[in-house]
Image 1 (tube, rainbow, N blue to C red):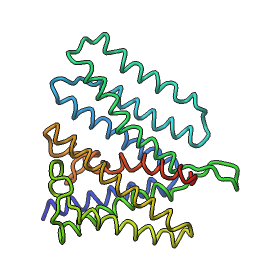
Image 2 (tube, one colour):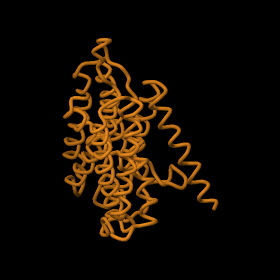
Image 3 (spheres, one colour):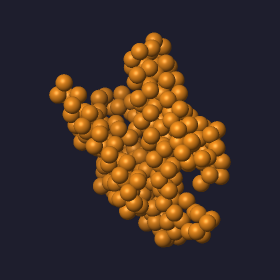
Image 4 (cartoon, helix red, strand yellow):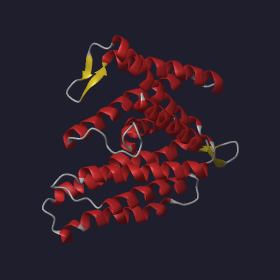
Length: 277
């Protein structure tokens, strides 16, 4: 019972922080998600460094990912041009060239995991800025638009809720038994249906095309599920249960944000394809 209370309280606080970051103002958005990005990268590099054949520079990877987030932020609000990404490119070059001098046993693994920390963790969080800031033709300026990032997280939470409830009640057919024995097809379908229903409610209030929003929900659900499975595969390969212990009762930042790591890039592609962003 005590563990349930701790888990519930942590979940409520975490959701409240996410909602405040998205709804309050752009500065809080940048601070909170920049911080989450840095913590997730530090967590990821700490995990892979547990392997005997991996020596990733956690500090440089974390600084690089944090810089990428704020570079996207500056570029998205038209505060800086594309030159803002040059320091980040220098960091990537350093991560590659430095292995020539460190004489580690397996530089290929170090390169692979260092780049994965940027591609798998840093880039998705940075792309949140693309969802949050759009150019307004009315004002001829970039505006902070919480709707798309907020909806993305609402769809993910609805999917988790629906998948859990339907999985507990109806789950018989395993979705990916090799990676995540508890996930079922019934749970995944139930989560998807609930997310699509939630998209209908959002569409009713914002007065936009329902099919586009249903598609947005479906994209987030499908790639969110894959994102969850990718992190499960990573943890299985590393032989660990949780990515960390920063969130009591929940594990690490990666454990809570794993679904979003694939859902965010997929959402950006979807919305750009429809010329919504």
